[in-house]
Length: 148
Image (cartoon, rainbow, N blue to C red; front, side):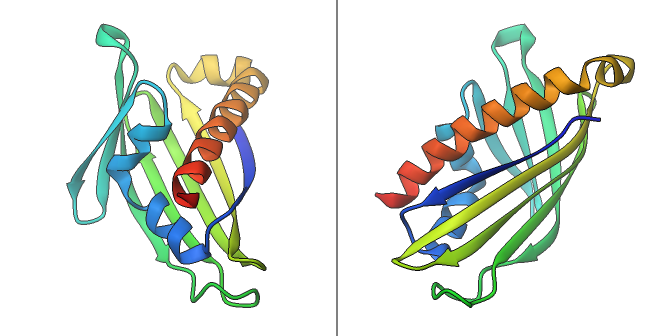
């Protein structure tokens, strides 16, 4: 199963970074070829790809704890989601930790299986590298948006 964790420092307070990250439809602003639709109280679906090569990535929020404030020492926020689509299944999470100087740090982790599952087992290192690079790029774009 591909597993990776990406870190990004953001020039915005933790509460602003959190609000930016949990605005699910905005994820499409940072992730190429992706749109996100809220489908329920704690559910959303990301659609990634172009035309017939697109797939749905439905997710349910299973853990939700916003940061307790913006001062270093305040509790970090943590969001956890379960991915239960036909193409991607597994678990993702992110934390937002307050840093000095009205900054914050995001850690984003994924532990997923990609269909067909045999492909995932054989190519996990490549999926991990691609996932890490992709999410690093997405988090940089998110950080720029949060800092504005």
